[in-house]
Image (cartoon, rainbow, N blue to C red; front, side):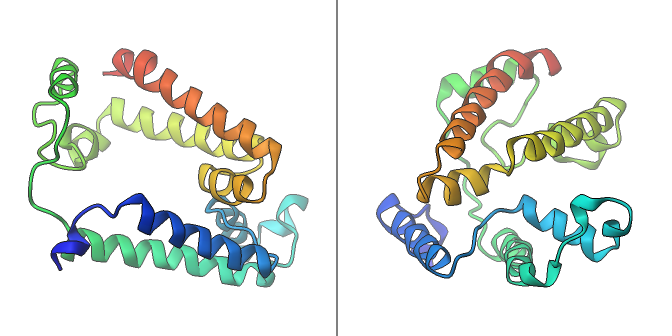
Length: 185
């Protein structure tokens, strides 16, 4: 159990991801979480209103198990596999987060300043959720997929557009953390 609670090294998790991707490529399947949102909308009947959602969703049933596995895995990880020890953060990071108003940096994986009900139901929290959700949804459609789809499936099948998208994701993340995050908080 102690081994499961620790972060897994790259030489175990990397080959496991490669093995899964080999199987998916061999079977002609692609992996990505955002495609499941399209499938859910199609199941709900959005294909009657918009051509984009008018496709055979039953061919994507296998990918819905990824969503189910993420929900079940998240539940198991949170309630049975969470490590109660503090997160080892660089002291400079703790100092910078403290200056932004994060009082318990490193004490929990999800800081209550962002992930508590009080934070969510504040005006600022609602605006962040609505605007952020719109930007993520728009960006996913504009980029032709999400980070997991491009970074895992796209790069493993050597697609140049996925390489460009992943570079863009990293640049966007750096801009968010270093320029926008301090303005928001």
